[in-house]
Image (tube, rainbow, N blue to C red):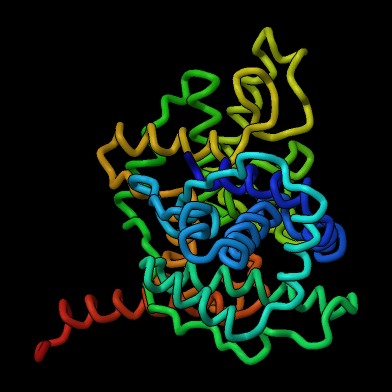
Length: 354
């Protein structure tokens, strides 16, 4: 069971039975403009924490058992899986009220105990930090609404993160991947255009599937991208990617089924409906096997590859920040560590004393 399925189940449990959490999720979606997927992940984290409060470590463990998806990466679009056990029966009004009281009476010591539980269960520091971020956001919301007098998370520091360099593909590897789809067929042409677009622009896979035909500016050689928080940006796109998109759209227009297709999305499935992020992942998995590349590569790896190759070839860090749609340049700076590795290789290969 993948994390998306888990998040959906947990979100349904929490939103149907806990009005306080429903209010929080609506706040994330309509005021903070978080994506539905992010809201579901927040709900999953709150569900596990609530189980910890009510039933202790064992209940929390059964609510979310780490089970990393084979070959999965750890980017924004690829988080570790978990197995969620739903309650056997719908909770009573009294049980819902009891949980509300427990959530609003939480102390910093209880949150530290929850973090200790995560550590004992060998959750990664990144996962623990994400769950703490969920609680931090939830209790800030409760404080603003006047449900609590003080934020129990305010005194808790986020666990220090391990420095993990983003995985990326070498130029020869990305060339091999991009030429794998058979673009003499409609679906092959679509897949070639998708992969070219991911590498050419560095867009997130969620941004890729949200693209519409009208977002492609052929004359200006750019795309209009809708990013996180409903923020739009203009992203340049390479002529090779534009050519792949044009070929795909021309083949789609000639297809006898095209009249029944949804004409708005740029990338559609075989039924003519907007492609999902999961479908993009499945297509990428297929081509990784075909060309013999690492199966743990994810669509987000192509985003890492875009940023790394840009910086390796002299792009300014601020420019890459804008292209990626990062709010903070500190998020983009992780790629400078990757390029440092490239500099060391160049040094070792070039310096007489190396």
